[in-house]
Length: 571
Ligand code: SRM
Ligand code: SF4
Image (cartoon, rainbow, N blue to C red; front, top):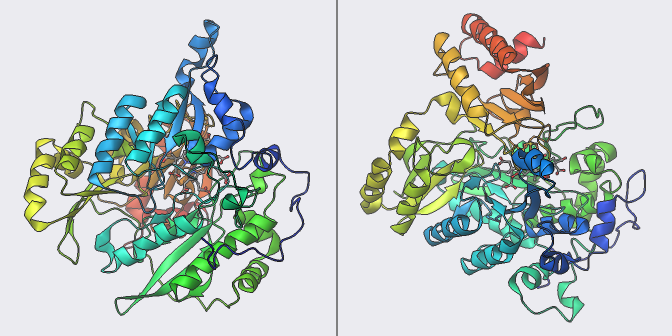
């Protein structure tokens, strides 16, 4: 459907686009892909390998999936002269991280039949299933489709899952603001029907006009693109880590509009000084839905036209912005939207946490936030979380929300149903598990890393829990267990668990080794800095022991660990 957001931009520069060298190989794959089709169908029907063709590996990302292999088993298979154990990860598109109970049940069944069975809640409020063999991709996508779920555009050089502050308790107008996540996701969807054709066996589009794409054209974005909406005072979605961050401005309990921040991005590359993490810069305010959506759309078109397409390491909006200047970028967006952005309105973030346990919103509905360590939903020796969530879903009396801190919120429970849900949570020891978890563990987050992530240099979600146990002991010894300290770990410098905006960040450099970052704030408004490089566990714990001792003895009243460590170790 033609609308004001998908009109063609007249002044787009000549292709090939900005960048120092020629087009990167991925650019050529996109342009020659026939609307992201490539030879995916042929790759799928090749029974000689569990993998797909190289070019198609880049294209399936736009359909929400990645080819991976079990890195734990590489050596053993190589010794036996076997191919790597290939499988696929599929990521759902869930704007704002929301599921109906019947969708959760369907998803759990699909996970059990087609994947490892572990449901992974990601740092962008959605769900990933791992370990799906090639022959199971189509059945998985079809089953998702039957449950009205899709994985379109959750990976690839395109707008990704749109985030929104999770907890409806945060504001009486949460629902209104939350609805923007869906609207933004919708206007930024690709027009190609390849997903339906390849995975759902729908008829091939004959009239190519039906899939003309004024936004993405044949080149898509130069790189992934991320958008998040925060509802102050809680920055639970780390709004400044996104290419576009919207900050809801609420005046007299009404939504006046959004401050717009652009150019956030958290990845770096070890040894490449041209790469850096950057927090988004607030460029102005918009006061209506139409203006908000228009501004978002044109921020994308400017990045589409001016982003670096020769060096993928330097292709994110943050680099375009710093190369061309914030004032230039803003005025180019204003030219394209046809109006001026207003001056940004004041806002304050005081936290970025999930509210664990029972909470009630202004409409009397109840919410229970469950601690879900590193977003992994499974039954293990400590707690049967997966079984509990299935029981809860089967009541049909709840919805599910996922937080950008990788937790689950059992949501929208009526007063008369609360006891039923509470009993299930009690019977499965979920309440005991959530209440009994330390603050530092609740505040911690790790990315996936081994065994599935091909880019991992060190462990993250499989290691952080045991490191946190040791950190808990240290905090206990220094009588700091009640301190709200945010700790995050990633297995490489890509920053998937946003370690660069933690108070204590660990960034993997090699097996068992991590850069130690300090000095981020508690609210996600300040990047941390590298304190020491490539430490092993013993060195990490020795450093932390000393930090906690100093912090306990030298902090100012109400000073957070992040603020203290910046003052102490970097001044
Ligand atoms: Fe990420 C690549 C996992 C959030 C920055 N990320 C990957 C891949 C797909 C590895 C790959 O390229 O083959 C990882 C798959 C691991 C696996 O086995 O599942 C992966 N990223 C994740 C997730 C699942 C981490 C988690 O434990 O929750 C998160 C999924 C989010 C989602 O639902 O869409 C995830 N990734 C992030 C974030 C955090 C965020 O967006 O708030 C970042 C940093 C913010 C940013 O984008 O600047 C992030 N991931 C990256 C990058 C670096 C991008 C760049 O600008 O250079 C890569 C590598 C790449 O794209 O080349 C990457
Ligand atoms: Fe993989 Fe690195 Fe992202 Fe962790 S931070 S999931 S190791 S790409």
